[in-house]
Image (tube, rainbow, N blue to C red; front, top):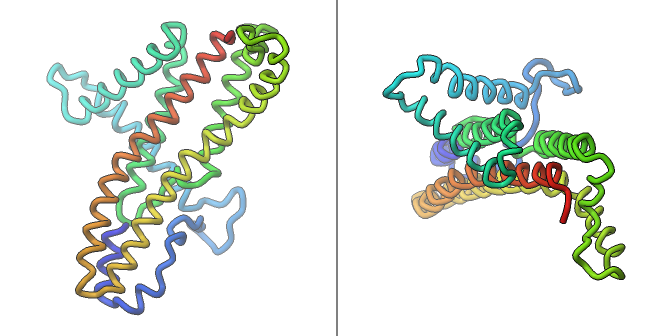
Amino acid sequence: MALLVIATLFLQPQEAATSIHPMDQFVVTPLFGDSVAWYTPTNVTLWMLIAVAAVFVLLVSSTSGRAVIPSRAQSVAELSYGFVHKMIEDVTGREGLKYFPYVMTLFMFIVVANFLGLLPMAFTLTSHIAVTAVLALAVFLTVTILGFVLNGKEFLGLFWVSAAPLPLRPVLAIIEVISYFVRPVSHSIRLAGNLMAGHAVIKVFAGFAGALGLFGFFPILAITAIYALELLVAFIQAYVFTILTCVYLKDALHPHH
């Protein structure tokens, strides 16, 4: 994405630089026709399918042979499996391992979508709050329903801090309820905000490169550094989203302070 923008800027530096809008890369456009409705296939739909296909190829196709000496793709799949498995076990205990498929699916979809968004001309799914909000709301509803199914009324003990002095417990209970229902908001905004900010900064520096002409070498160095940082952010944000999911799952399994 950034490399293509830079090439265009050097060909027509003044005209291209003035026409750059960092937020244009996040516009949802229909694949067919001119208008977008809830049923319209869009660039979001396309890249969502690409992300799902990439996860399938990585986790299913690359491991179908079960080679004793694994290929690179099989090694990545096995490392991903072990990474998420250990994360769930460390945070929730062995009781949480039965929910491994759900957590693994979340992690792989988010991390693959994040990395795909760094490709030239790609669309970053996880920069859209509509996508991350659905993922966060699914986690919130799943954990809440699971908490009541497994614990019944005892799940409400999550909001009652029994270790605190009695006069403070009602106040803390209100704070706990508010923070609980804010979870899907913070869970989704954190992921979308970090991805959107990084991609916007890259495009801003690309505009500087074109505007400066021959001296655009310096913004290009900055873009290279930011791009390397974005690779790290793409993984870290997927990790943060997943480990928070594990923390919320732990609350459902053990809802006592």
